[in-house]
Image (cartoon, rainbow, N blue to C red; front, side):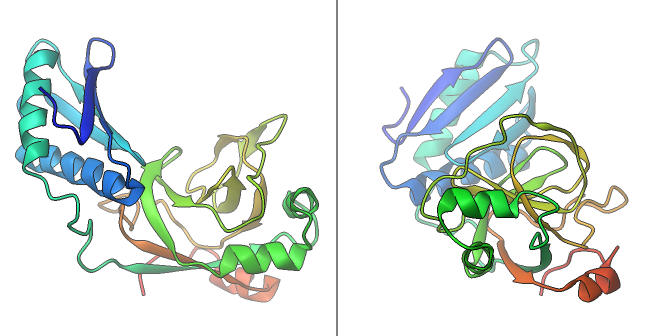
Length: 236
């Protein structure tokens, strides 16, 4: 039987989903990430990978090596021993991300500002003031998924997604914010660009941050943007 803190259920024939049932969202986020890290480090036979998000973790398996029912029972025991009050990262690193905000209207910043009933300058201020926690890694290329800035309203996605979003764009949608490490299609409004190289396929890991680390955005002008182009993203 699963503990009251989670809901464990099969997801198709080759994965188990463990979702937090805690009312405290921060504790639930920590719990699923502690579980994902435990599973990765334990190298459980038959487990292919663990993919944590904001409040759940998907554990993919080779069904020829492990049954989903048996894995579910094992995960329930593991969860019982996890401390969801323990910080996910004892010493989180802070990544300073310079951003050339879209004040000239090349991207979507003016549209976002109009929808929020704010000026472009207010959107830039609200986006660059907080310190963001990396909640999980998303697509493409290990995008750092962050809680969104304190805008008055959730940001709608684009009615027509772009077929090509270049690497390095900074975007917002709903109550979330992120950076795009690699070019890909996308439907999030783009509010700026960072000159930093976020994804490095020659490095290990491919992206420098992990869930629990911190991100701060900093407004820069075009001259600084040009001078920083191709600089690799590092913690400060």
